[in-house]
Length: 152
Image (cartoon, rainbow, N blue to C red; front, side, top):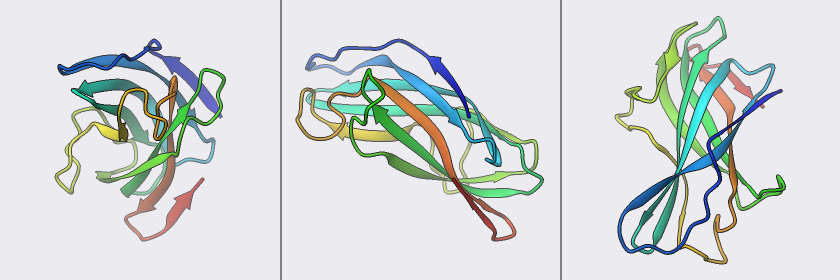
């Protein structure tokens, strides 16, 4: 397993205007994964009383098969790597041939655009991702064009 840390940690205060701050991320690549995460830029956005945790991953297909769907999971962690809430998995509808990469501008086949959302909540709320310090980015599932599936 390879891990890398990017960004800086941010302490949020309730804001009335739209603002964004970088969020520290940790990339987790499984040795058996058919995709390799190259980077995962994290961001916290505050819209009035709403906080959104976002991720902008880049990755590439290291398998010998075409990939159609990637289950990409964002895991909220405290400063001590304990759980800071429930993990959120997004299904990325892609068309990645062997060696192809997905960058931050990748046009998903279902029309969706990045960023991937983690949690949406209120600053200081007791529910949701209120104590998130680091967001781990993990490819947890892959569906190939031939119908076969890989899972962590």
